[in-house]
Image (cartoon, rainbow, N blue to C red; front, side, top):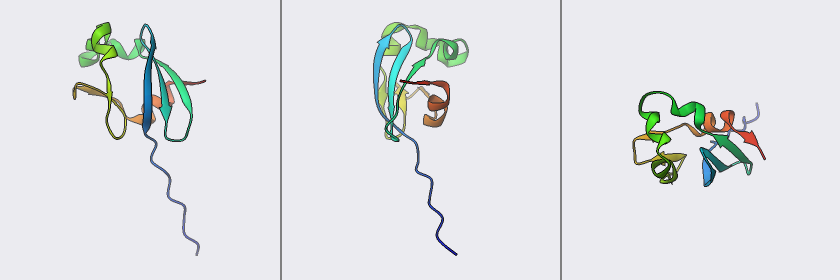
Length: 85
């Protein structure tokens, strides 16, 4: 029996504010994608993202985008919700 290839963990390697509620995100697979966060800003703590200054103040942790250790999304989710450039 041969060894199965382990799936590589998908992470966010870079993110840049584009306009309004949109970020250009680079993933560890090399793809650059655009994500409009508007639909994600409608409920719960994610409403904080409606504040432009807060939205722009994201950082990257080793896996994904983070807002003040309060809001974060799985990198796979960000990938699925975004569109390829």
